[in-house]
Image (cartoon, rainbow, N blue to C red):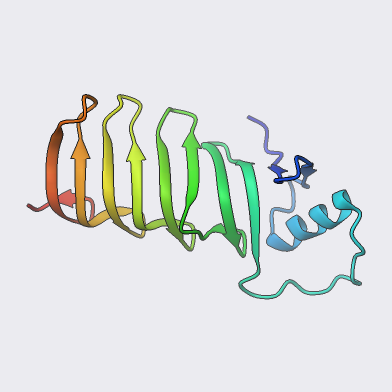
Length: 145
């Protein structure tokens, strides 16, 4: 996969960004340029500005959801990894955080709470056939009962 990032907006317009400048400000400039929006003399990007992207390409997969300052930050974001994993749920500052579902290529899945990328809190691990393998409390990615 190339280093070039592409953003697919809900109005089905491709946004090509400069692969050497992956800052949030560069994304805003690319969107403005592509959509023909009036640029405001390099107005600074406001902190915590949210932008919705569909199919943001990373080397590891494709993300759809809101970004804040260039990082995933959404209650309903989705990333589909090249290796077949898929996460759908809450993100905070670029990490899985809150309620979410991780589906494995085998068909098994974890449904539950996450804290900065680790299973943390109440959750259920299902086998590919839908039966429960583990259910209960998790801490730092480990099942504790």
